[in-house]
Image (cartoon, one colour):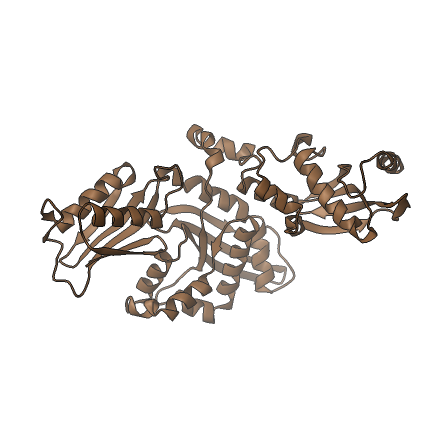
Length: 425
């Protein structure tokens, strides 16, 4: 350690002007997703030394490399200044990943500048996940590659992470709202699993906030008399690509306690199962606190569960949406009536457009009635003609544009999550 400090001191004596990043960093230890580094810092202002040390660490990891991390190679493989600058400007993005920053030696003053070496501990695994998410650092590790097809690997840099809503497992007669109000264990389990996804930088939709929103606009009560129908509508309008159900089973004995979480992930639009995981901590803990026990169950299992979701969630194969058509109550038109310049029935005009514009022709027409026409799923293309990601809003706009400009059919389009609701006037 003395030799290391001597080398740092020598480097400091010939370093650049005060306030610059010295890029003198060494890895001290790494465990459980965290890493501690020895970092040299220099600043004209004594109170800024700690900040300089932390920014120097991230600057070195990004652009110089540190032995023991990423084989000593820089983490930034594809520069994105808008993203990387946020670590070093007033946004101070690095602060989200710093556990601690402590002086390793006394602060000294040489000339007009202050100098010191710090022990800086960071959440390294979370940092790497953030870099991958923002596509500046490799998006796949060796385990991921072995589990994916050649096509998946080829498209890895275009990986799209799903938006997820976490909900409690429902038993007969229950609703999400009633469970959140009355079942502490399942409410805590949902919160811990949601925290686990957010810790992996996955965008989540908060269930309670969504329930509050739909209740405010009365859709939750008016949609149907059944809790199942209400909750299904809530999921479809949540905007989440994937919903994850969580059930909890407490095992409390004299030898200790543990909580088992049963997690299943489904594609929201189709209900197809994407992943299933039973998460049980190996050891028992001397506590009966549900929140702590649920957290233990999440820690070791959320990453493999998420890996399964991402592996099976394939937006490159198109995204499924629900497409519903309805006749405005003030209109005498039905779906059997002629429409458009060619006089085809309205239902055939709509069905033909969907058939031509569903990605790879994948859709399913649930049924046609006089005043309603429902496609329980339509696969929309992954990208539009400009190469930008297609979403329900853009797909709905293209449909509205076609009906108004080519078929001269008056309509309005509303987007509610992955639901496209079209009203014919």
